[in-house]
Image (tube, rainbow, N blue to C red; front, side):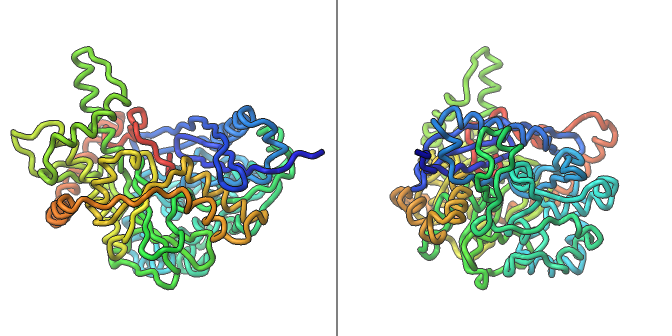
Length: 547
């Protein structure tokens, strides 16, 4: 008797980790496997990843999952893939990589972004996509390549994203999904490419690089024989192309369960803040920032603001403590430092300092400035390390509020996912900063789950995404945690100072950028400043998004 196909595999390919997760058809996580997937950074702002290795890591994760689940190949009803968003993965003849992928971390397109944002067509581009142009995006990166290294595009046949590349390797089909297609090159209302957007990016003569758009809730393609041999799965298994990792994670964590006013923040290495709205109800901000990203639900999109760095700021602060202890011969692990956070915060005064959390060389939400840098305001001789750490944590709360303010009123309820959601103290700060009760999803791998949910709908396990959400998402939401009234009042009074300082610092960032550029020109081999590094080696908090 043939074994029942009772599992769905979700693949979540992040910047540094590729995960393969098996779920049963009711959404229960059965097992997971992961493989580190490294990238390289250069002094010119580059951040690159090997396409070949990314596929090898994905295949290795799937083989490892097969070792953990008895009969995985025969039991797999479908698999789905999501991955890190933005970035540029070029393929040429024979589906061969043209060059290493430019990741979302790559900052080389900054001069082109500044030029394009000053164009009279940029507002029309923003109103169609709902997305502010920044260095992370494929549109900006392709425009920069066209301007300074056109030979790359001349050798390319198709421009893909990370998940699209893996879908190609799994199925042999070049495609992208409605979410990345519309927020980069299209219109979020139609979920299709838009001529004006492509013209605004100066890419009309490169339109042939854009692949067909496939919705993974409606269409699957069979796993190829070659991919089956490499992954240990069965040829012909249906494969669903997921949406971008940000919305897959939010979908799995509860951004949309039917209640009004709900928002979802993923607080890991980066910060992603979003709310689900009808496409016709999107209110675009005057500054032209943020994203509007389609959800795999008809007519529904997410309004999104994203921080370049969230818990990377905490990693930096804890790294200071670890480095200092190491000078005295005391080796302290990440887990030991993280375990002390709650105690350090308890010994510090709320709202005593300001910290702007731009530790990862720039910011993209709710404003775009690749020269923005982190810093403290209000230090005195009486402040000690616990005060600095509290300011860093509160800076994440202020940045979260800043992001939601750019999208409208504060949430009625904030749902949290990502590694930092495990910290009661950080949850309390985020709750008080937004004035909203928080709920934490118990879903371990929300990004992989979101992709697997799309496959579950595509193969008919559920008649609609709403039905799938009712079984896969809603039951895993924890109880609401109300904001502390006194802390909320403190942050309400602190926020105007945070905003005033943020705006006043912009000329200082500009001057510091000029100095950095002069230093690099004087010594090209000096390399990137420490704050520009991803700090992955110190990262105790891990996010489903952009891992």
